[in-house]
Length: 214
Image (cartoon, rainbow, N blue to C red; front, side, top):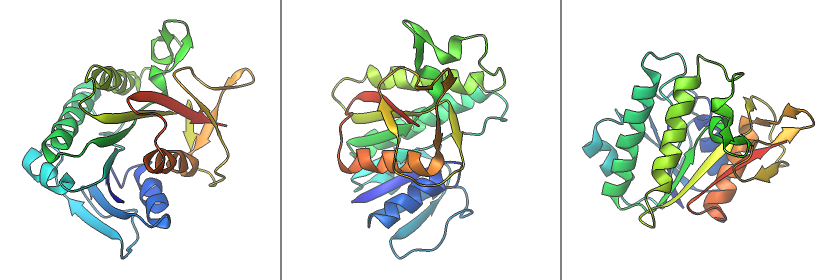
């Protein structure tokens, strides 16, 4: 498959690229630099600004799937506005390109901890990353309102996303926060990438949110 990864050099992106290449896919990595990526015959680099919609649309044209791991950075000022604006530009470019398959790497904040109560709305949720989590949830809601126009999937990792080994062994859930006993579950970035590529290759969550964790 021809797969474009947006946010390819961030915290999650390099593992997605690595997993996709290991499975033999042709990968286009969209980022502002080439850091954290190793050369590969099946890897093409696309350096540019995702807010340049004409450029991004042309990059995406002809791809089989787009994986968005976009995040402007948890420490960025005006995080809600930046996250929302960037996400809108990505969706617009996907639609303009004609690509029908999009997987968005979301956050755990939109997962329910009780009926009608999301993790991001709890008092314990970290205030410094709350604007980004709210923007990620708003993106999920926006995707849910799109109807049949796009074959999207919104993947929320477990509450704690960490560096760690690739085991390919994890639990899957829908819209509720996964727990490990009385503590929120974890997931390694490498295993999150496994779940992402599994869903791209064999879709089970079209126009749905799901989560993975140990």
